[in-house]
Every structure is written in C-alpha cells, then in structure tokens.
Image 1 (cartoon, rainbow, N blue to C red):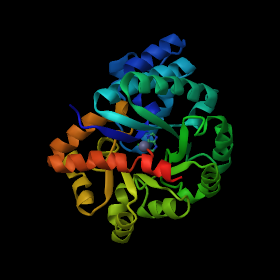
Image 2 (tube, rainbow, N blue to C red):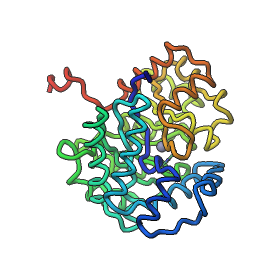
Image 3 (cartoon, rainbow, N blue to C red):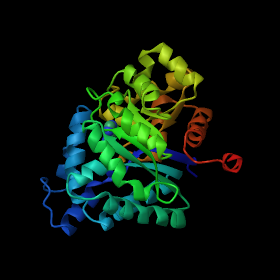
Length: 322
Ligand code: ES4
Ligand code: ZN
C-alpha cells in the first residue's frame, strides 16, 4: 500500500506524456516537430528552467478541446491514485492556452469532467489553482482573473491563484494588485519563489502577495533569517526534488537539501511538479528521495502528514467554526 499523500505542486500540463501528446496531435491534425515518442524524449535534456519551459509550452499545442483536457487529467489522476495520492491541488496555466486561442472555459470544463470522475472512480479529491505567467504583464493576469470568475469556488473548482514560469527578472511584487483582487474574491494564494530566483523573492511573495504557501522555496536555505521566519510561521514549502535535479538547481538527488530543511524545522512537502518531464509521479518521487537520501520511515510519514497539513483541505472543525 503506498503512503496516503496529497499532491500540492503539480502542473497538469506537465503530466502530458509523449504517448498522449502524439495521440492528441493525431486527433487534432497537428504535426509535432518530432518523428516519434523516442525522439521527443531525447529533447528532454534540460539545462535550466527556461530550456524546460520552451519544450513544455511547445508541446501544449496538442491540447485544443475539452476532451483533450479531460483525457490529460484522467490519465494523471489514475496514475496519482495508484501511487497513493488522495488529494490533489492542481495548477493550470490559462494564459498559455489563451495565447493559442483556447479559452479558459474549454480548459476548466474539460479538466472539471476529469476531476468529477476522479472523485467517483478513485476517491481522490481535487482543487484547481490557476497560475499567472510571471513573464507576462500584470494587466494580462488581471484580465485572466476576470475570465475565471464563473469557475471560482465555492461554485466552481478554482480555489486559488499561483505564479509560475520564468522566475529570474520577474519578482513577485509585479503582481501585487492581482493578488489583492484574488484575495478579495476569497481565493487562496501561492507563488513559485526561490526555485531559480533569490531568497528575496520568497520574502516578497509572503509580504507583498500574501502567499500562504511557497512553491519550491529551495533557496531559502541561503538566508538563515528567512528560514527562521518560515519555521516560526509554519509556511509550507512545496519542494519538487526530481524537478530540481532535472533543471539543475541541485547536482544530484543525493545532495538535495531536503533532510537539512526538515532538520531545520521547515514544513516541507514533496511533490512531482511536471512528472512527464522530470521522471516521476508522487509515489515515484517519495521512493526516489527515500532511496537517494536515506530517509527514515518516520521522516517519510512526516512528509506525507505535512502534505495534508499544508493542503487547502478544510477540516470539519474549521468548517463548523465558521
Ligand atoms: C514550472 Cl518547474 C516550474 N517552474 C516554474 N514554472 C513552471 N511551469 C511549469 N513547471
Ligand atoms: Zn512548478
């Protein structure tokens, strides 16, 4: 039995496996610039975040219809459920689809069908977090938030906003107004920070955006005062160790700072980020860190427990208190 866990850092577009990419390309009459799935996989020799993002945005071209998004999320949720995921908070990138003429209604209606099925078929609960592309303007993000209004919780599946894509040179403060608007709409707030960017971006995400959780946050370890703050305030970090290795934020998994971060008292969770690109889903990731870092069973249980503590699941007591 895999350890029950929640997945808190997962880009649904990053679950697009080469086989499904080719099947969807076929269905939509799109020709991919790769001869076959093997050739495509050889393009996965990333050197940094940007080289990954180039491929990730390019391959999204195959996602066009509600059915495509439903099939994508069905495949992810079946895999996740088989690896012990009981709850998934799923990122999606509406601006990346809109740029190709695919509206948010297509994306959310399609994903929503799969989310409903996952609850019924696998007993997995789900929520959506829409991410703004930080290399696009704040105005574009605000417009995107506006288009998402029909799909916001409690009536729709979107519970929060996030910030992703190219980090360096795009500090969080640019999105102050958007995050204020999101908070006013009752949305939860997270942001990628400290993946490739400096620790100051983590501080800014907390202070300026009101981020409740930091995605990655790896580079907090360069700033002891920031670590002390994250520990004191119990700010969850959604680490993605396999992603860090593939995008060269750390050299090898055996040198990942996860054990030091846990020892420091940080509320760490372990997640799969873009599993089709980085070599593993939630259970694969737990297995990989256990093996490479020699984590004890108690440490693994702590990570699994943290994933629920850090989630946006509401406990019955909290609901009753309102
Ligand atoms: C992402 Cl690993 C990562 N970082 C930033 N943005 C992203 N979008 C998809 N994966
Ligand atoms: Zn990410």
